[in-house]
Length: 313
Image 1 (cartoon, rainbow, N blue to C red):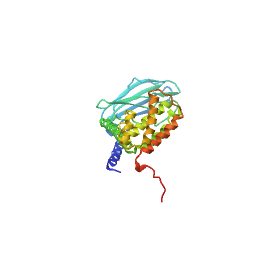
Image 2: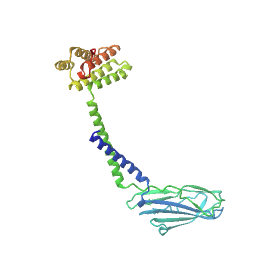
Image 3: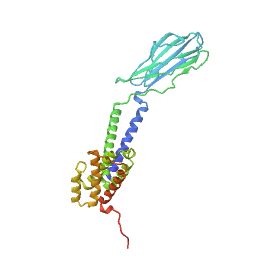
């Protein structure tokens, strides 16, 4: 493993660590911006035609609290009085406000308490809301200790500014690593011997949609492009746009045998006739072209990679 792969792994680990930490941190309530809401129902007097009390208390660290006030619809009840008071002295470290509702039941069998929403505002202007859960309470029931409705998860405080900066840096880092990976992969493919790449592409072309659908013209176009790319990789030629005659002349100078040049000429000529002259080609010619292309690669691959022939003596 080279030095570069080591620091790439270290960078990946750092990016993933920051990513996990950045996402998990907001899930924990910020101690400096924690909020809570609690509703308490005094049901001792919750009998038909009797008066009972409902209190709503909300607190925040370093901010302001807004309660819904008297503008609440109480199904099956009549609001007699609403009183709001600052109770911060009872909740150390919080700015706490309590609203007390004095209600009268109107003779129904149960009371459906609505959700009450408290609003919180931090000094920087960010706001968030929290609700008490809805509740249906039988009037004939008796709970001398009362009923608390604080069984809910406190709302999350707003994410700090640095969190978004870290998120942007993580995304940029992931994008850079992806581009770097693509670059390394491209260089690795280039270092692969040209004849091995050609063999793999020939095998894939033999099972391509062009062959399955009987598109002979499309097959020969792809075969021509494949062999031209092989020549570009094998002999460092600009063969993709070079005419067939010039390619054959250069290969002759490079010492490519006549048999290999004839194989290539037959394939490229057939591809040109199909593409430019719109000559009809039989489906059976695909198999012949496949064998010729494979033989051409066999004849032109580096000598040290060719299988040795002859008997051991």
